Length: 252
Image (tube, rainbow, N blue to C red; front, top):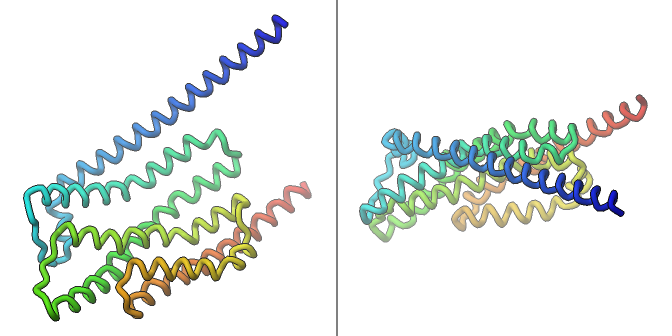
């Protein structure tokens, strides 16, 4: 009995040490990510006079008060800093969960981080350079027919984020499908079965971030459908490679 009690105390002590180590690792990851974000935030604020012309693209905007200037500048700096910090934050998250993953899962997850960043930037670029100008110009033309249009910086920036950031996440769909296939959560056949639901969801998203005209919705919905089908194709490639690897391992 004394020996069993001693073992129980030792196991409890080891569990407490493990918990403390996990909390310490989590704290370190959060602090590192926060510091990286703050550095990016300060750097963008310092160079804000170079950033503003790129964001406003020559559009005449108005401010309703001095606090609007602060909100506008910090909103731009915060959004851009979050985008720049995403790969670093993803890497910190990977380091934290790495002990709970197998070697194969760890390598697979790490290999997807650069692709996630590239896909996100491509989606944001598509939204900023194509969708946002198209939708913004369309709405401004409609409004100017009956009203004197005067856009505040806050409204402009909010609308720009609404038509750009969601596309950044949607452009990650192919990589997400590849990743879920690689770790065995989904299969290409399952993706084919839920295709109609995926199309319906993408149609809803395109309707939410575009004005109610067919051209704008097609501009957004078309690439989203292509991205889903690309994800299915890439999922098939990963699935086939995974089975070939498993067969070779079994033969060995």
